[in-house]
Image (cartoon, rainbow, N blue to C red; front, side, top):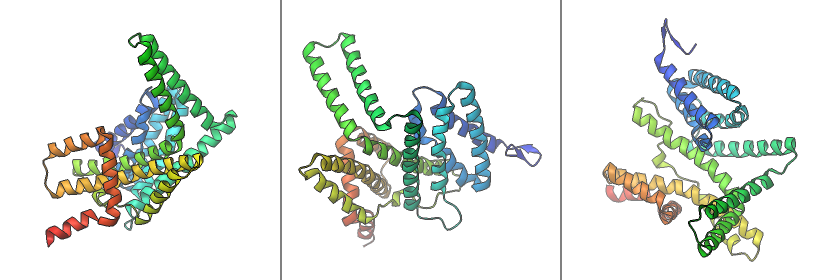
Length: 320
């Protein structure tokens, strides 16, 4: 039993179970915190690396049992059932055995797994309820935009000309969200996987557990062959065909986020190498995430690394 350590209670495992229950429960039980599902694989990833496969699984199962009971009592079990699809992500990223597969391989497997499972759940949900999930999502986007415009009108703070501008902007935004929905779904999966790795490695260092997940994220590098889809996306955007344009737009957006992760790894490596003050690093990260063009520049830096090999090149220059 995970609560026992010999004849005594095991406070470390009790804390781990309580923490996992908290992380699992917030997006499941608290309205408006559904976005926190993106960190649900984190406790799994962490405890499997720190406590090992067997004891880590015990902690995860106890935490799921506690959260499931609370969700059942609160009438939120459907949300909890959907959240279960995220738990295997932590297992895939943690890997198994001494000869773990490369971090990029595990991240790719986790991304493919989650994409397939969510598509399957959407298909089953649509079949059971006899609806088109994509159409339902489009309608919910349209309804959300319409309600937002109505709230602006009811506030009485905007004249007719301002309301016309707001309405036109919201309708354009709605059109972009519908066009980019496949990319938005896939990038949410990418961000879930990346956030789990990022926060997990930060916790390992912060708590000085002596454990790690193998490779350092600052060495993160995408396959060089991924540059060909970038070229394909460019040609699709230039093609005189609306469907090809939408395909290129979605593919380009996903690749932008993918290369953003590599660009951030380069930025982190260079800042550590130059021994920049921690406050300056935090300020730079805040600026990059608040400024859209900053993110695009970082993603371009990640793409340029395919040819320039910025991290190793800089190291070789300093060594020479």
